[in-house]
Amino acid sequence: MNNKVLIIGAGISGLASALMLERIGYAPVIFEKSDRFRNEGGGLTLWSNGTDALHFMDLLEETYQNSKIMKESALLTSSGKTLATILLEELATTYGTHTVGILRTKLHHLLANNLENTEMKLGYKLVELQENNEEVTARFENGHEETGAFLVGADGIHSSVRNHLFPNSVLRFSGYEAWRGTAPYTKSGFTFEAWGKGLRFGFVPVSSSIVYWFATRNTSENLLKVDVSKEELAHMYRRFAEPVSTVIKATPEKDITRKAIYDLKPLQNWSKGRMVLIGDAAHATTPNLGQGACLALEDSVILAKKLEQSTSISEAIKNFEKKRIKRAKFIVNSSWVYGKVTQIENTLMSHARNMLVKNGYSIQKNSNMMYRIIGHKV
Image (tube, rainbow, N blue to C red; front, side, top):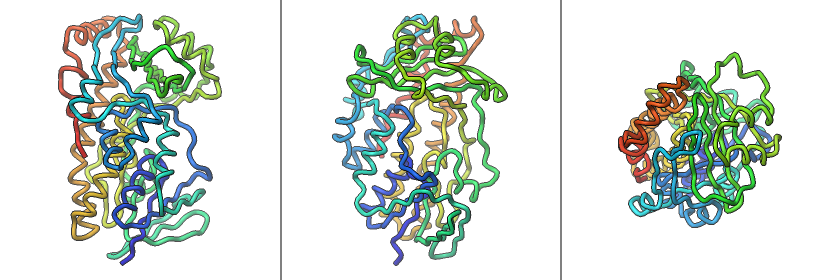
């Protein structure tokens, strides 16, 4: 039996799936189109469902050592008034694992450093896939060709594997863009998101001395090419309460990234035969609910479980897809709606939104949406 599995993409889903597949007897080979291991991306929030998946991987304590455990999360107005609070310690007690802030590079290296017999190939751009009843062959731009028992497409929102399997898949522009950065900051141990009018600012501690932040602004796709300097960005958020201005100013301009926000319109299927999509390749979501990395980690655990439980690879892939599609679609669509609500630009509507949240009609707090998401066990 061919126990080699081809994984396209060396991001979180690719590394995590390799780790889990190693443990059930496969020999993963990861192909990454970049010629270097990823070393960018700011920070992440890993809610309890994400850290539960890391617990299943036996990486929970190592994750805690490389991240910041968060005890409280708040929704604020741009002037700093509290609209709602989530007591993350209570969630940890209920669901068993903490919510943490972590640098994306820390999570990448944590996963990679725990791989034992995975082969990593950098600078391999996929150009062609072929499949028969027993194996999958991948061909790359550099002329290399490799065959495995099955293939995992873990190559992100702009997935080459997905374009091969489902060429009519659609990326949706959210209507807003985001800046991201990390900065030295030691004065806060809680995470918050502040809402303005068409503007939002998020703040996530990732260690005792570093915070990850993001800032969003409504825009149109034809304005995305207009440069925005750090000074212009700080001016844009000048009416937001501290520590917003301080954090932006403390971030080196070279470390601030800007990106238009898209998601993937939910697919009806994630697989064909022995080829399956996971992570952002399958269900790229807007970042509003902090679930992109969490879903990728869940996918990796569930795929390995289904392979262990099923009598064939094709059966396992179908069972994985059946198990995951409904949940991922719910999160993608919920995040899309959350983004539309939080990016409201009209003064009267944004005021009404804030009042509804402050008086208990919180999307995060009282609709049970977040609890359905973060209470999931792999």
